[in-house]
Amino acid sequence: MKKILTLLFILALMPLSAQMSTPAFKPGEWLKFRIHYGFLNASYATMHLTSDDLNGVPVYHVVGHGKTTGFASIFFKVDDTYESYFGRTNGKPYKFIRKIDEGGYTKDIQIDFDYKKDKAVLKDFKNGTEMDIEIHDQIQDLISASYYMRSNYNLTQFEEGQSIDIDMLFDDDGVFKFQLKYLGKEILRTKFGKVECLKFRPLVQSGRVFKEKESLTLWVSNDLNKIPVRIKADLAVGSLKADLDGYNGLRNQFKIIMNE
Image (cartoon, rainbow, N blue to C red; front, side):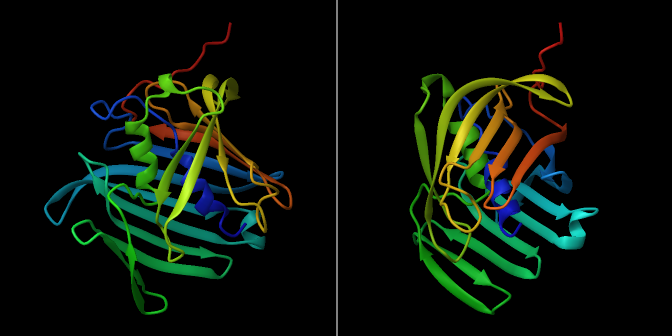
């Protein structure tokens, strides 16, 4: 399950919303996901959004945490934390933190974004190193990208098969392009009832973890919140599913279709 929770954090908040002046989220938003690997209830992941101030800049502060539980933790222990500080008005990331422990594979990094110098400073606390990475004005980190997309894309202008790209930086591998393809609408049965969702296909690199380039599918609520409802991944060995398990502090009412 190495890097799976990392990818889930990428996907967990990739929905699209309407206008920057009316964001799909507000401080206090909290989401919880229950992750299944095969028949195992493998782990839980949470995302919590608050408001903060960073060096005089008003920002949103997001903390994402994922951890294996129960029987699954006997085979593979995961304890991941991601944090992002991004501007309340422009959505730009100013600081990103990644602390992970995935079966003994660990990372402890911090990225500070300097837009005046068009660079990001990545500090690797585990190895005691520091490096500069060239960036541009539209860069996003792993977490801020999701909120940026929720507030800057108008889905009514999208057609099935259309894709969007976003440049992302969250590791010492440098900037990479994340692509998301819109597949249409679908009604899902959830623990909360029936929910009409927008369906997406994130395009990922095939290889050690995923079966092929299009092995991931994401469903988000077709309402003003655009929160993730389900994520499915076909892995090289087995499959993984993450379902929305709890929520609080949403800006808008979570739209549920009443059973007839």
